[in-house]
Length: 220
Image (cartoon, rainbow, N blue to C red):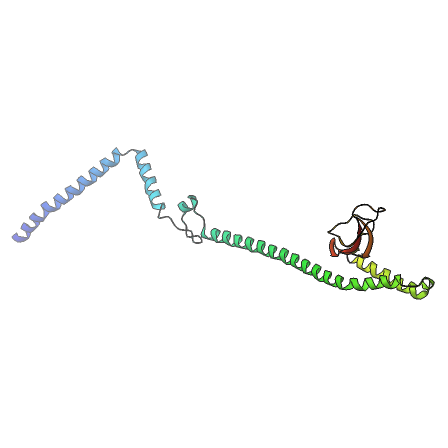
């Protein structure tokens, strides 16, 4: 019994000291709260709330960029890829348009070359028509046969004209080396200088380009 009383007597002072320390801490804390103004308390509360809300910058799920990076003007990788594809498409369209124009030009040139070759082969046939009509005797010129040949000749000329073939004027014109081929010269005062006095073979142009030069006689 005496030992228990001694232990109780030793523990009671320690408990009292602990209780006194807690009372002191509570008193100091209450005094600090009294000294803090309502404005300061509100400011601290706002800072605590903003600190909780402002977490680490989250990156955009689609672009992988944070909000500050967007504000700095950095381009979205998707936008860069779209611009590259658009630029590539424009280049390909321009190349295709140039290819189309070049192909049309080459095709037109090939067509004209082929047409010139055919016309050059047809012209001797046309010359024979003219020689045949010129050789018809006077007494047969009004006959049905001569008139039939002449009608075929006129139809032939009309078909060539519709295709773009035209005869080169020669007799009575001034000699032009781009249109005429002088194979003979004659001294005749009735003609002017370098005037064509006779056409020996007709020349023709196809769409403004000479297919065959006229063979002519030129007066000096």
